[in-house]
Length: 156
Image 1 (cartoon, rainbow, N blue to C red):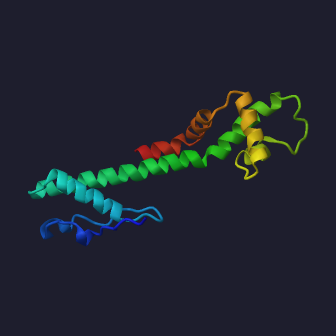
Image 2: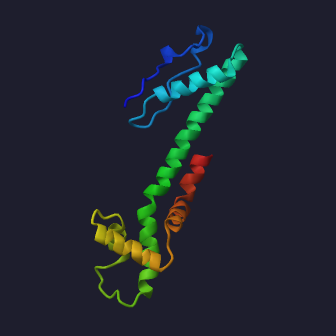
Image 3: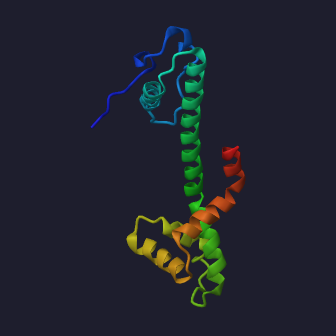
């Protein structure tokens, strides 16, 4: 079910402050209507009357929108780093495994299996990680550690 999209011209903003409101920064596929619905809700809740009220409302809506964007980007950064995290952890535990003698069965190859469409391959790697007590939380933590500099940039 498609929701009705709200556009800047649909929002009840007085002409004398309309110029401070501009289109939000969007990720691909996003609808600016979500932003304008948030602005409408803030207008309804805050009932701005003065220029200072409108500026404060604009600042709040911008901060809320940017925080949403930054959180999504931070989460995506950690999720995208999961393959490297799986490979690193497998690289650490594989040398200790006595039955892994084949050179072609290395951490990088096994890391790719973690994301395989083949359920048997995927389960094999999940089981191996579980055998060594490696959970999703550890993988995300390793990915966050690997991407700490970029995450700090987003937080800044």
